[in-house]
Image (tube, rainbow, N blue to C red):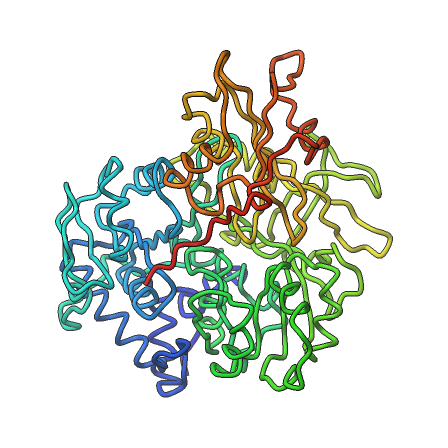
Length: 540
């Protein structure tokens, strides 16, 4: 049994939160217990997972990766992604996963910001690298291809480069500490480009730990059907690794395959975005509705269908509030009766509601949610290479979420609206700024504002309001064709409205709240009503 020694009782020990030491710990204490079950793929025990991480670490070291480096990973969910992630952390380097939908300017931005020399990329994505400035990138390991091909400006290695000699892993220059960077995960910008959230091992331990995710135990198998490049995919993996439990890695969420995935992987716990639960409830009833292993579903946000989901499928439902920068400060009781709530503050988390001057709002009033923590390192370590954004988010010593809340009569914290211009569409955070940049590149667009409007499914849809260059016009179908190769599928607007001029304040700022209030007007063009659907590109 591993002896746990803490320097500070508020901070987890290395063996409780650092990937390298956790793998070593469980490979010794639970060598033959399963850790990762890949749907319709392999099952890796803790010993096999550690050995795979060491092989990947050896391969990465041979490619020049050192402790403290950043390494970009651009891979779909799967065994190779997990091995590479753990191999990076085994070396004490920082794992930088990026969204598979990135292309064009947003891809160029995150590549530049990450400051990595090496990227591990799926073969299906390579051609996107040809179209951008590669910044500090020097080499790429290509996964999922018989022949790695070539990328102008990069040294290209085959996937076998990740299968190194375990005996060649270099010694660490120093131990990996709980406050060291584990990952940088990009979250959409609001008034600027996407920002890289710096997360220490202690931060992710607090985020996925037993205070926030109190409904998950070491006996659970957590079904991870969200991308590993999202915090929603990071939490299941690190949460179960820290507990000594197991995780089921699914390629992507599928309504039709969901219950097969649960049964075949014997998963007992899952996190569902609100729309996912809605999709499941709308399935035709079946005699097999309760013939599964699932015990716990964490539904975020808590939609009206949550109660129906719990009752129909015999599952205990929870909800919570989290984002990449914080550590699950709000958690509900089991089977919350009201939609829209996020729960109450958990132990170790401090929260406030404030006005635009960071002054407390009155009881029942709406304010911005600010978060602090009792333990050092249990919130984000800032935004990578963006001191201005870090200072703004952390002003007055509290992290500003940009989300508006109120507290109801039962003491539950209720999400009210987003104070920032980020749009939440089908599980993806979309930066209005980044969408506006691409639309504004169209030669006929003079100015544009992008806002979120209510969706008939869940969360939001994207509305762009355009004022054209004098004497020119924009055909909505032509604009969609212009945007598709320039941005991720989930960023392409559903609604397009053409106006003579955008509404402005006396100080010439665009009045986005007025556009939100107007919503879908009679002169708004609907892409889906026109029969144009833009699907996610399947990789791998």
